[in-house]
Length: 113
Image (tube, rainbow, N blue to C red; front, side, top):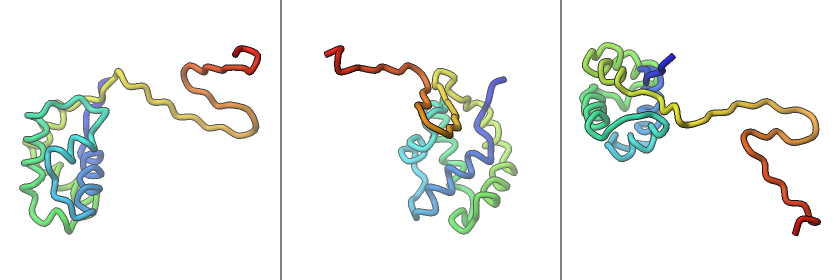
């Protein structure tokens, strides 16, 4: 299953930027969408479309998501933004003693030195 950037995910990204009174720019947008495959041209188009939303700084995440979903050009752009499959995401739950290791674990013992 190929995952693409959704209106809900994008609304969270935009809300995080806007709530700090920052203007949405290409640079701060690209910083927030690391882990997604997006070229500069597409990213700039997304930023431009988002910046055309009236009173975005007064909306919560749900309101931003609704406005994004109403914009067909923006929704088309989002379908072109795929998750970077080369990144490994590991979610773990650990209770008790011992290690909870994801990936390779390298141990150096005192006697190995």
